[in-house]
Length: 423
Ligand code: AMP
Ligand code: MG
Figure 1 (spheres, protein in one colour):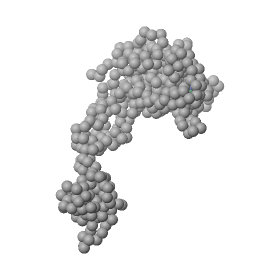
Figure 2 (cartoon, rainbow, N blue to C red):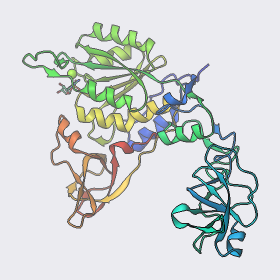
Figure 3 (cartoon, helix red, strand yellow):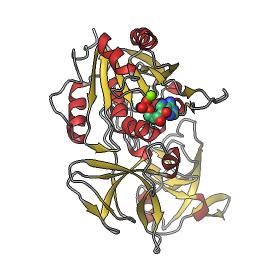
Figure 4 (tube, rainbow, N blue to C red):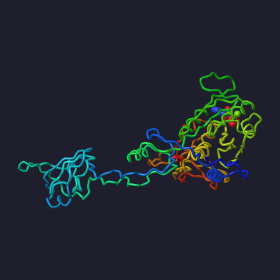
């Protein structure tokens, strides 16, 4: 049996949550779904590993040459002052040629097994060949250190070494490491099944003509693409009109088939906002007041085992709320370790004043100063409906609660859009 969600996992008793309180609460209460499946390595990028992967054998499996060149015993090289007869040849992919004859060098190629007794390789570009009465002589320059151009067995991974632990989202280089140990299939958490819903009588899908008062649905594209970055399967349930019965029926059906539902719009307590009331009637929903800017109440809830996020309708709020709260919760639910954003402290190229009681997330751009150093500027306009601001930005500037002003040159924390963790 998978661990069940807490009966009311988003309940709390604060009027207003600080950002770090919100994260601590979410981090403490959201547990991964436990279902796992075997996944072929070729399909595993972005999947969350459910087991520990160990190297069953050392990588590389044998000492080998790192270059095309000549392999020899370093002691022989010193004794013969770099002049060694050539006695054998080993190409990559072929068994070794046995022990190397004393005081000789073997012709080797990149990846070839090191001949027994040889511990050093000279690059072919540095070696000149001489004819010594019918024998070929390699003339090797001075100064090579013992072990030069040789790769030791196990220098990448030791036999038995744990290369990746459970909870890791697999990156291309992780797949390469797993493949290098010979493993072709791994146990991963199953992908989350998510539903996205747009709401509002004014919302129309692109491709249709727009009547007066209507707005094209841009959030669905924003949300779908954002959710796909966490490796989820995303189902678009379309646009719900502002009618209680329609909203209730659609959400009840979706809750039984998905691990989470994310809605945009209709998340206030206005009389045209039916999402909140519909979810409250079927499960639990809490409108969190977060002490952040851009701040609008955001809904966290559940219908049985299905998580529910009611995002505001404005695109800037959608993206910011998604990155700050929805993304870590869903990554954790999908089995990943709780992601920690990567913050860079960079000098501000702007000035601002702010209230002390809330944390602000500004849309920020990396700009070079006169000396070519990276600084962070803030997007000049404020509107939370401006998709342009999200496009101009490289990430979010995070200004802590206690800060009341920023002057040019002050260090500010900057989180690039791809720095929200989870990889
Ligand atoms: P609401 O949260 O429903 O009050 O909506 C806030 C603002 O966001 C309104 O101007 C809506 O028209 C707009 N909005 C809501 N949903 C979408 C959407 N799917 N795409 C673009 N804009 C939206
Ligand atoms: Mg609305």
